[in-house]
Image (tube, rainbow, N blue to C red; front, side, top):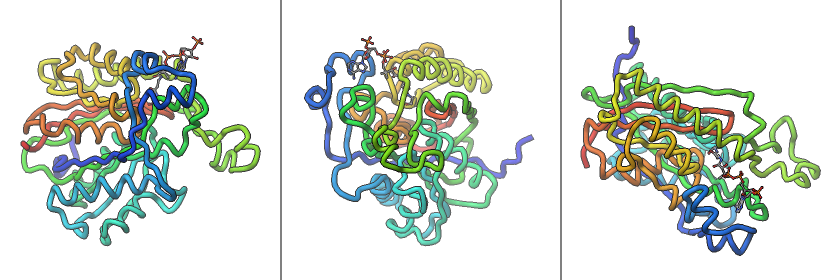
Length: 333
Ligand code: UT7
């Protein structure tokens, strides 16, 4: 039996990407790659980069939250809680959520960060839901944002073509009807941790001359191994949430997938039996913004959504972490 007092719903969404566009042709000048390779293997044409001194992930979070507050006509002082999903916090501590709360004037809110890599937004969203569903909080902000350029080696072709900077935010409130977050499935498997990680800078390998020489402060990824896990797990978990909720492919209005590789997204859609018209893609514009991809996708396609639409959100990322979430969209535009 459910212990939920209320249903949580997304009552607004807003995103932010920096102005600087890093195109495939610019990357061709930096490393041994081609536009053709990047587009065929990943679907990415360009990505955004946050330039300038002392510009951390909180800048992305503040910009998308300011837009969200304006759009939803929300007073920052009415926010109870801010949860930020990120693997590129401004600092280890204090949390990026704290910094964002301060900068937007959310003086009554508390906040914390969640680290679940590319699945971070789904983990944070389901965490935020609990506070709404139990009735303890009325307005919870969930942000997914990453400044991936801060952990990318632009001398090495494997990863620099994949990632970009950006973030999105949603406001969670009590639903007045049956719409809102219906169900979710989250999973993790630490045995995959070595295949996609940031080796240096933590308590295991604190920053040293050695870690810098070893390039341990840049993202490490065994691309083709991660690809295999991503394809299988993202497709499995998306199918699983459909079965669990008796959803046929006709019932699904849109798939909102993590944007790491178009081929992973295609495999997921195929397993779900949904056609390309239902698959929301913006990977070509932003690349992989890690925790930012799903809220950025909701923001980019918000105008398409109608109240009652069934959305399936799905992600796979470092950890390994993965998950799917089923929601009924709560408003018309
Ligand atoms: O978001 C979190 C989870 N992460 C993911 O989901 C990413 C999963 N992995 C992938 O998306 C893909 O594995 C990549 C896009 C990273 C790589 O695609 P792939 O088809 O698996 O390529 P590969 O790693 O097997 O490499 C194929 C070839 C290699 O050359 P050889 O050994 O066949 O001569 C690579 O050295 O492509 C080469 N290569 C490149 N060539 C041009 C690797 N990176 C590049 C590049 N430009 N940027």
